[in-house]
Amino acid sequence: MNKISRREFLRKSALAGASMTALAAACKHIGKEANSAEEPAGEMEYRLCGEDRVSLLGYGCMRWPTVKDESGQEVLDQEKINELVDYALEHGVNYFDTSSFYCNGMSEEATGIALSRHPRDSYFIATKMSAFLMDFGNRQREETIRAYHESLEKLQTDHIDYFLIHGIGIGGMERLQEHFLCPGLDEFFLNERREGRIRKLGFSFHGDVKVFDYLLSRQDYFHWDFAQIQLNYADWKHASGRNVNAEYLYGQLAALGIPVTVMEPLRGGALARLPEYLSEHLKARRPEDSAAKWAFRFAGSFPGILTVLSGMTYMEHLTENVKTFSPLKPLDSSEMNFLEEIATLLEEHPLIPCTSCGYCMPCPYGIDIPGIFSHYNKCVTEGTVATDSQDPGYRKARRAYLISYNRAIPTLSQAYHCIGCGKCVSRCPQAIKIPGQLRRIDKYIEELKRNAD
Image 1 (cartoon, rainbow, N blue to C red):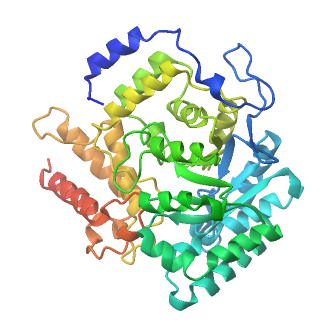
Image 2 (spheres, rainbow, N blue to C red):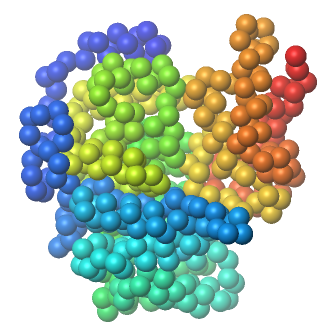
Image 3 (cartoon, one colour):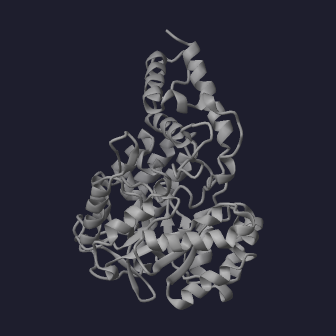
């Protein structure tokens, strides 16, 4: 699609007709239909996966809240996690997605503690074969099976409802052959499904689309019950780096009737923190809706979506998202076109496509890679990046950036410590050239320091 100017976009938005056919007609809704009122009716939207009635809002357990213990170490705040889980279940959220990798390896145990306080048939647990991301050499099969049994113990359950082969596509076909197919792990997990210890078997995809296409071509063998992809309106047609356009991924899965679970509906939070001029467009269209609500409505509007994951660290995030999906008001075709225009304009904004997943961590040199990228993106989005020294506001912006950077990132974790070892690059699902981006940010900071008042 050709890029358009902001003025032309505003003109097109103003001319958008209200007579477009609602996409909701194509969606399969379960439970109470939305009434004509603007406010949600209050009952969670559900989708079917076989006999399972799954909440359209799923809980991503990658970003549980933390607290410092007596020694000053950051640990998961189990009390708050329990409160969040209790509220979610009370308001219809019944799908919880975790991994042995999440929260520095603590997510599964914390999630298990919180969920085990409720009847086992009141929720669905999703976790992953995260050992796929590790290289155990000739012990790959042994270590992966050990990690699988450890997940069952931490989650305090005798079965996993939704089990995923984690990060399919990272490392291409070679890693798939070495870490999943050749060791016979595929046969092990297929048997676990036959025995009922895994109820639904799927995969999460990042990276090489050849791997994605191969796994779908073997559907007669694997019989994938579901698949997880990155889907949001920015990556629907404009994916970059290792990502693949979600339009293609979703289309292929839908053609085979494979339900889709959505990760990164907010693109690591970027779609909740849009540049001001884009936020103004959204507010002009629906003043009462947040930027996050627009993104969630997009992700949930497709009939093949089973659940949309959100990593809700705070209660205010959870309560707002529950309202969005209780029930969901799907986008109509006019709104779909509107978000495509937003995505086109967003391409012009120089953000680093980091989703703060933390797969690049820990850095052997102590660099806070996600924190540095998050700070930079936040400043770019808010328009507080000092670029032109001739600009009247340059000195103020320069000082504000340096102060906020030093506050957000401890000195020992800042970008200038990067030596370019590259250990982080192969782990990044977004294929970000991390050392190069760190050097770019460090160079920018040094320029700001040289231009001191």
